[in-house]
Structure formats: C-alpha cells, structure tokens
Image 1 (cartoon, rainbow, N blue to C red):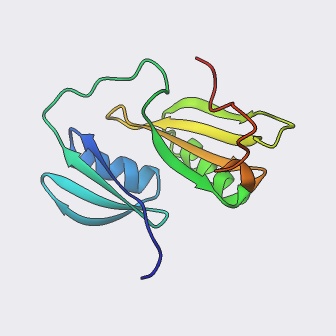
Image 2 (cartoon, rainbow, N blue to C red):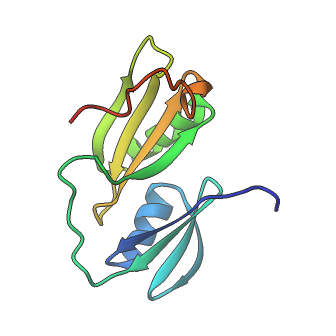
Image 3 (spheres, one colour):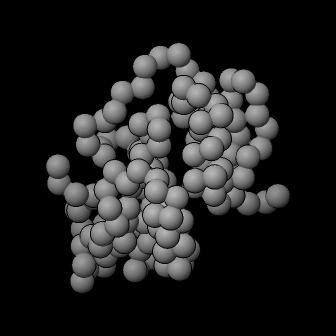
Length: 143
C-alpha cells in the first residue's frame, strides 16, 4: 500500500449500536472489533469507534467539531446522500449548495450519529477551492 490514508478515532457509548449505524447506515466496512473498539473503513480511510463511559453531549451548532469527506465525483456525493436518506439517518443540516456562483461553490450535508458525532460530506465544483483560493476568506457558514 503506497496510498496515505486518514485515521480518526472518536467516542461512542455502545459498540453494537455504532456498528449498526456506520456499517448498515453509512455503508462502512467493519474491521477488527472487540468490546472496547471497532475499526471501520469509510471510503478507504480508517475510523475507530472507541467505547467511553463519559457523557457525550450534543454540540449546539455544527462548529467547531466535525469530520467527514470531500468527494472527487459529484455522483459519489449524491449516492451517499441517497443512502443516508433511504436509511433515515439523522441530518443535522439538510443538503444545500454553498457559495453558489463563486470558486468556492460546493454541495454539503451534515449527519449526526447516535453519539452526537457530526459528519460533513462535500463536493466542490472547483477542485482548487479544497486547499487553494486564498483570496477568499469564507469558510463554512456564519453562525
């Protein structure tokens, strides 16, 4: 393997519930599992759900903490959106277009898992907006 992949560990309070959400709901592939943790493959990236006894509180808004993916193909974004809708996953923010007509234009939606973890899924119309376009100051929505 000579591809660099992303790893993210996040808290959950129930491993079987996390597995049901991420595998059956989101479409991840399950990897190793034990009573304290579950490894998940999300589009080739490693997520690890770790069991915690600490209370997991809901963020008031989508900022500052969330994670997700940026899709290279709009059809992939649309397929995940359709899957989330069909499986009735909780949308923290419904699908929308941001910065329409500008170089920063992108499609986005936010999901919230049963443990209050927020995920954003994006597709940018112009690939240079992902890391470039420093002449713009907009990042996310004003809240």
